[in-house]
Length: 421
Image (cartoon, rainbow, N blue to C red; front, side):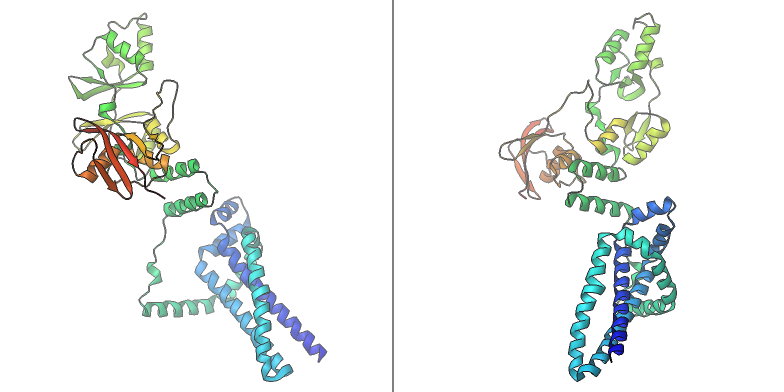
């Protein structure tokens, strides 16, 4: 009898060990980071390459592991029940249930899964050959199970072949949001990463410097006046127009002007600035920032003129504008620091009408809809469905907007009371 008990105990321990091994394998292979495994596989790690292949067919992998795990658990439970009935009679069923529940829960589920989820990559690399062997052995049975599952789901109107999968961008954005929520990313880094993903969705019209804010050079001015304007301007490149501001004939670069003046014995008189200016580069306003960034790099350029569908001049876009969309404002020694957004004691924020909604959302972590307008003035006009007068207030999505100043048809100052969190 003693030998029989020892033999039975050895078999049960072995089956519990196998069950724990299956449980830990499943947890490790589902919890491990695909990006880390891919990086290790690229560096030549053969175990990582095997893990990557297993993860590529996750349905078959999980099916094989679950099949093996259930076979082991059911066999262990059946043997224990039969043995306990022999020892204790009918009450042995109760004893077997209690004993197997404790053993399976602690040693075949919680313990191995806890260890595997704590060290997913390490465990995944160790168990990969065993998992591969399990998949090969159980493939015919798994295929049969999958067929039955698909047929059953189809009877209830569920077709797993048409499942919606997240795009790579959505996956990355979700990971960024999760890390920021858990404190793994500071706000500035999260904003920067989100902005990189947004480059494909943002058009030049959302970022460009509008034509009314663009400093331009009139070809009809004297050479001395043009030279004085170029030297005193905070900008390196200035559009050159003739007869009409929409008729831009070139782009004047301050460095080229200085070279021309130096070659002319230090005098600006007599210089033909149309010859000094480079050829203007026109791009449509519907171009995405990602496309324009690629064009800037391929053309080795930093400056472009934005036009609408009719060819009318709308504004300018620079490489710096696109980079600022990613990293935030970039100032140099010639830039003027702007403090358009002023936070008041009561928590309200006073901004100028031409403040970009995207910049405000990023600065204050707001959720204003920047699809309906680019600037806060445009946002308020869209809500009011007219050009409001100073003193008028509007509420949208929990935010309260009060028009403070208006110049002709342009809203120049707005007071925003954010929604309470």
